[in-house]
Length: 245
Image (cartoon, rainbow, N blue to C red):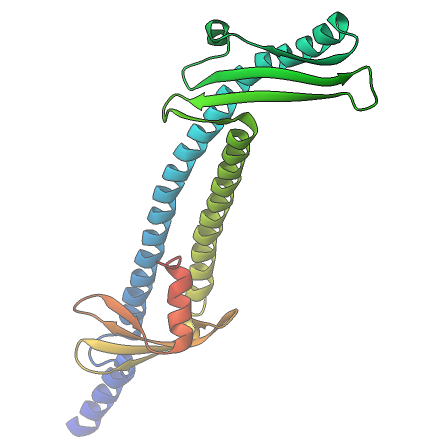
């Protein structure tokens, strides 16, 4: 009578292990999911760190644009006033007006200084009448002088580039998190197979990526808590979850 009972107990224990030795399928699944969560957490931390740097550089760039505008508004007003004045004072010929070095201090703040401000008018009273301007600006932090348009275009390009980088970071973080949630939804359908006493093969739907979630296969080491992609699809999924780290 004892032998049949013993056989039933052994069969029950084997069913509970579900091919994972003495460790339940749920335990292995939970540990594997925890590793995926840590991968996502690392991605989110990196995104937050990158966003801090990007936002700081954005603030600096936007502040420079504002300070450039602060010195350019009065400079451009001077240009427009001189256009009117030169045409009032002269009825023909070509003339020139400039701000003296002593007066250039009026076009300065703690970031930029207008170091040359001139206006030329050619062919007054003729069909070919035209104005030329010279506006040179020095960045006081670098001592580099350039024309106003070059500085402004460079700052606008930098601002646009940083905004694009910021959007990419946000999208990578969102993609990692949303993909992870979708992966976990498939956890009940994964196959757990014991390789040895500490290593397991985990495969099934939602564990790979090929344009969208697909099947994949991973190796999980319980000792090191390391998960390793075992095929191309799982490697692609890891790349998404890690944000390309």
